[in-house]
Length: 289
Image (cartoon, rainbow, N blue to C red):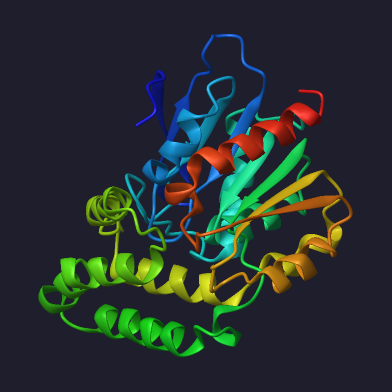
């Protein structure tokens, strides 16, 4: 957990009571503000290890509607466009101007890219950016099966569908597949994080809708119109972003650099948080604050 002061606010957006968690910089004089977007089935807790290692920056992390402490939207879809519209309005409410730095992880990388394509930010950082559609990757069969599983659980009676989606067996299975570290302590940490927060979704319909969006889009749909300095941090064993597709994605940005971390897949924010945070810090410092 980040040791910094955490402020919590609630914003009524598109029918959602959206919770926003703001971590004040230490010391109090901040080097800048980071607006961070978490990934699918996560919430603000997932970025704790990154936040803890960027003490000089104020970090603002909303729980996306339908996840964590935020209720689902009733006036917008839970897809890339819907989330980007919501975050755009939220940024206005929080008075996050063009000096703000934007960060997104996994599904959040797609949403952040869409937001950066239509709003001014000082920079963009993408952790585990989605560089190839899951339905066209080596994980296509798994993505199709998972999408069908979510849709089935949404259609079943609540007494059956809810326990299936929140089952420890399903959560532990995802942890086992995604974790690349061989360190038993790290593997336990990832498992415990997923057990604690993977079940924090608001409704089965929201979950199915957001998952379909997460496997149907990539950052590359928006990268060509993003002109701000961009940092991409990928994992060499990430099934949703191979080194080759990450480099191809980097080349579509006007100004982007790519760092590929070894011995990690799609869980950089857990398994390689110190290295990722150090790269973010160097990148932001290189922009002159």
